[in-house]
Length: 263
Image (cartoon, rainbow, N blue to C red; front, top):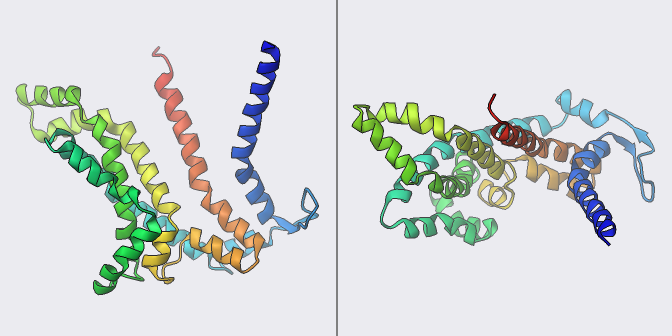
């Protein structure tokens, strides 16, 4: 009986791994397919035409990739430090629960519903259809995540260490650079990557606030799908899933480094 359970557990684990790994295999393979029609289990021919067009600048995927990278980097680079400092205020304030409830508010609504509610404001401020407007809209979700993510870091132990620096004659700058930053370095990196991914995969909010003028990779994937162009859609999807794959590798290395015994 125990052997049967072990076999079922192994099969379930293997199926789960295969299910999670499928997009990282199928999307690049489909982007290289010259001809792949039902019911074939593999492409009949392989052709790098889509990738050659991408590398040669013959399609807009390259420009959209740069724009998406710029938006996500700006969102992550701004929301991570702001969220880190804002979380300190939230954690030590008496109204901590109210502030946390407010931080969770963006996730209580669908991005499409929230974007629809904010669209009038963005139109009045002439931010709709602009890169700045898209960055500000995406930052609402990324900043809210950063605040919620960092609040547990600001606990009594960290506060005691910070006060110890002041007791020993240290300044706020020294406490920040020599105590708080080393303690939070790994969390800052994780939050940066997560904020990057929140922006990187945003679709509905970008579509509404960008008004179709600010193209990003998620929008381009759906555009190619609507055009019945599976090979270029697979190319854009391959580029879209690349940062999450890198984040998984980075997170795995970070976890194993922390668990490795000293010496």
